[in-house]
Amino acid sequence: MPRTRYRPPALDVETSRRSASRAALLAAPSFPLFLLLDAYVRAARYPDASLALCAAVRVAGFLALVGAGLLLRRPGWSAAGVRAVTALTLGLLSAGLGVISVDFGGLESAYATSIVFFGLTLAAFLAADWRRLVLLTTPTVVAYYAALVVGVALSPAHAGELADPRAVAGLVVNLVLVLGILSFGFAAGHLQHRLTHDLEAARRLGRYRPEVLLGRGGMSEVWLASDARLGRQVALKILRDSHPGEERHRRFEREAQATSRLESPHTVRIIDYGATGDGTSFIAMERLHGMDLARMIIDHGPLEPRRVVHLARHAADSLAEAHARGLVHRDVKPANLFVCDAPVEDHLKVVDFGVARLLADTDVHLTLAGVLVGTPVFMAPELLRGRPADPRSDVYALGATLYAALTARLPVEAATPHDLFEAHQREAIPPLGPRCDAALPEGLEPLVMRCLSFDPARRPADGAEVARALAAVPAAPWTAEEARAWWASAGAASPAGGAATEAVTDRAHPGLATTQAG
Image (cartoon, rainbow, N blue to C red):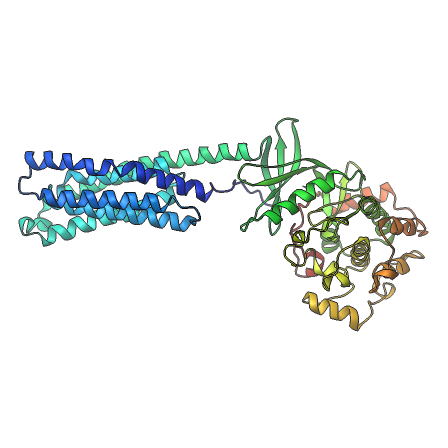
C-alpha cells in the first residue's frame, strides 16, 4: 500500500469561529481611532479631503466589525460560513479605505498599506494554511484597489491620473509592496499553522505517532504507528467520521472494551484505547503480519480444505470465547479473519469487533437507528429481517466465510439485502462438493451447510459447538512446513493489524471484499 502522510483532523470549526469573533471585536474599537490619523494627514497634506467622509467610513467599519464579531459569537456556524463572514467584513472595510484613499494621495496613497494590517491579522488570529489565507485576503485587496481606481476615475480632482505614468507607477509599487509583505506574513502564518497541527497531533494521539496508512473504512482509518513509551509498533485505529455522533463513538468504544476482555490467542489483542478532548477516538492494537482471508482468496483462489479446517478451528475458538462472554461479533467475514505469517505461519486472528454487541445490552441506539450493522452478503437471513443478532448469526457468517474459502464463491449472490433475503427463501444454497476443486474431508460439507441453514434452530448453537464439530472432522493436519512453503511462494506479506484490511476491494470477487467499516 502506498505511503500516506498522517494528517490530523482540522482544527475545530468552533475554534476558528471563536478566533474570528475575538479578532473582530478586538479590532472594532481601534478602527474609529484611525480618524485621528485621518485628521492629521488631512491637515498636513490634503486640506481638501473630506473629514466627514473619513468619519462615516470609520463608523461604518466599526459597526461592521462589531456586527461580525457578535454574529460569529453564536455557535453552529459551518467553516464556509465563518470564512464568508470574515471575507465579506474585510472586503467592506477595504472598500471604505479605498474610497478615503482617493482624497489622500489618489493612486499613490500610502493608505494602501492598511490592507497589509488586515492580512497579517488574519494570519495571526486564524489557524489556516497559506491557501486559505490567500482565499480570505483576496477580496480585501480586490475591494480596496477597485474602490480606489473607480473613485479616481470618477473624481474631477484626479482627472487624468489614470493616464499619468508616475501615478500608475506609484500604484504598482504600492501593490507589489503590499503583496510582498502579505506573502511573508502568510508564510509565517502557514508555518504557525503546521506547527499547531503537529502539536495537536501529538496531543490528540498521546504516545502514538502514525506512520503508514494500512487501511481505510467508511468511518475509520488504521495506521501503522510508533508507541513512543514502549518503543514498538502498533496498529492504531482512528475514528474518522464526517458526521460525528454519540452512537458512533459509543460503538467505537464498545469495540475496544469488548475486545480487550477477550483472551483467546485467536482474537486480536487490544493494547490501549482512548478519546481526546475534541472527541477523536483511537484504539491501539497488536501489529499483525500477513493478510486477511478475503485478500488470500482473491489473490490465490480457493484454499486447500485441510487448511480451511485448520483456520476454521482458530476462528471458532475466538467466537466460542466471545459467545461464552455474551458477546456477538455481528460482522464475521473473510476480511475480518486475519491470517498471520509471523511469528507462526497460518495463525488466524478474528479482528474488528466494531459492530459487536453484548447479548444483555438492550440499548436500541447501538443499532444506529435501525440501520443494518454488518456486511449483508455474510449476514444471517434473520438479521436482514431486523431480528436481533445472537451466536447463531455469527455461526451463519462463519459458515458463509468457510464456503467462500473453499470455493472462492459466495453461497448466495444478490445485489441488495432484499434480493439476498429473497434468494435465501427462493432457492437452496448450492452444495459444496461440486464447487470444490479438491476432495472434502468427511463431515466438513455437512457442517458448513448446517451453519448456513435458513432456520437458526438448525444451526450449531454457538462457536463452541462449531469448534467441537470441527475437532471431529477427520482432516489430515495442515503442517507448519506446508504453511511456511505457502507463504514463501506467496511472497512478502504486508504488515497490518486490527481492521487494517477492511477496505479491500476487487472486481472479480466483490462480495468477498464487501465491507462496512465499524
